[in-house]
Image 1 (cartoon, helix red, strand yellow):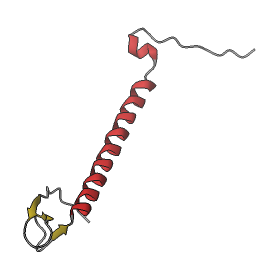
Image 2 (tube, rainbow, N blue to C red):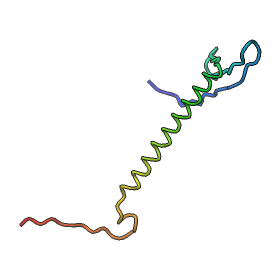
Image 3 (spheres, one colour):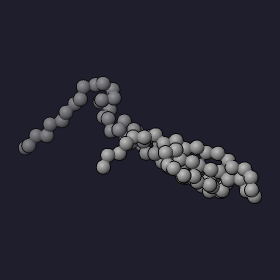
Image 4 (cartoon, one colour):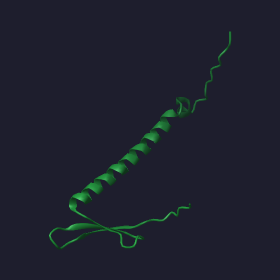
Length: 89
């Protein structure tokens, strides 16, 4: 199955009126998809999104640091490598 790279837009707005204000999320490209969230639900989603983004950033940063750390000191200093040969007695 082929997946298309499409950018989906999310609209966020506050619906006033009634007893309680709600946060509405609409997803562009999906007909009749609207999420009406209470303040608590909106905060929970926002917190979860922030946590997920943070995990991705940390994972990327750790990968980058690991790659950098695995480079030998010789490569970092630009000195020619020294190889050791094991001899059989």
